[in-house]
Length: 311
Image 1 (tube, helix red, strand yellow):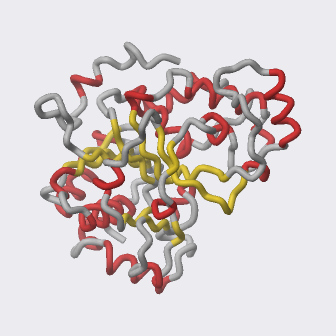
Image 2: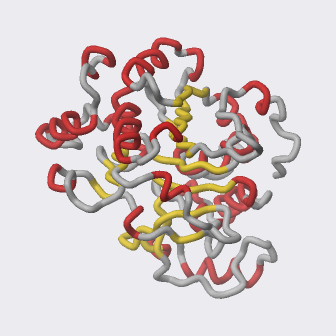
Image 3: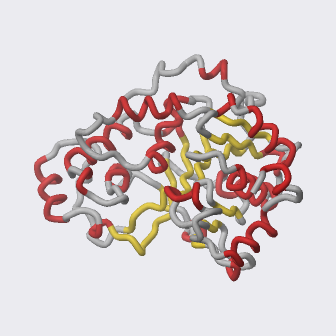
């Protein structure tokens, strides 16, 4: 699936930060949220800006259900962060692109949260290099340092979660049979390691200029041949599609579950409310204890947030 020629008008219509002297000096932060709980975006934005040496160089691109049509949400965020660079973008075109890649009812695709980092550059080609972050994240590390990591020839960088192994999600005998019989460029030429760690897709650094044109096709292919519609919520298709085709971020950039004791720890990225699929219920379903939630709000929600955003 080639990106060439797709959505060319987006280059003109988007309010993405303009490059200066041909070089985009901004650090682009992308997040996708299925609800309109602005507290999540406020925590992400505030923690990111507070941790940065150059907050003026950070540009937030938040994909929300209504996108730019939701002027009220945009202005609320601008009241809290008056000097920040941010925009709300709609989700419709990204979802349409996902639908084109996957035949409905034929096999299970990865969750939207997992697949969107790789679809967004197709729909928004102006985003040439960006950091995709799950919305229920506290950023304690400096994103400019993450953004500046050299990926060499890789297009994708992720930390790996070794509490989850590839063998937990795919039958290795089946995988060996696929490897012997399939002649696809994305199938590894060497045996797959049974103890390979799964990628942590809650934080992904992407250089879209280096993305393989067959990446989305390869994810769909793996979903189909593994018949992942019969599996649980963790889909191994992306892990296999980027197997040996991604840069491994230092473990310090792996998402760590938030607790009050972690606020002052050396962890660079904390996640609260469970996995990114459950982000919308982070403030409401009791996943985060009341005491931890209070500490989180006190530390990372700007003053007047309750009055401006609602609670």
